[in-house]
Length: 251
Image (cartoon, rainbow, N blue to C red; front, side):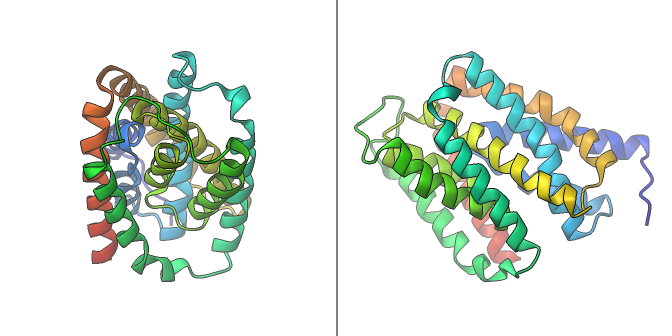
């Protein structure tokens, strides 16, 4: 059934994209705003998931570009992570169109609560880098591929999983971890989007309207990360993880 794109709906979608992009750039979880808005607009669940990948890719691109230009991410050094994340997300997106991911709904809220507690109470979560525990190739093959697969297959909390892995395994400070998280999140979004496009699930008009807001919101959120650092990221990560847990448990 065609969706009538009224001025009111356009403004609502663009604003929702802006807010989602800003929150996503700082702490992840922008899908909590974008997905309900797309469902409200009249999309089916499959169309909403696919269109969310389209609009979300613009926000993560905007944030990633800002972080790269500020020197927080060096793309030439993280290409193994990008490659493995892309492969994992592609495989996850293919499988989710064949299998039922509902079994994850009981486990993911508990993991998100554990992440919230880690960021809340761990004294190591700050701005300074600490000693890494694994090498970058090991990180790429395990975390990059694994979290990328999860994002393609299910999705909620992807940014939180990447962030905690960068902090706890590679010893990154919180601002640096957030910057690298956005680049890998962009990678998994693009991989999923390609296969959703192949499946014909993307509603381009609604997705591109939200994308306009995402471009602005992603850039705004990224600049706040650089300006405020862990003072802003840490409480927002905790809050977003708890909210996502509650949302998944209620569903």
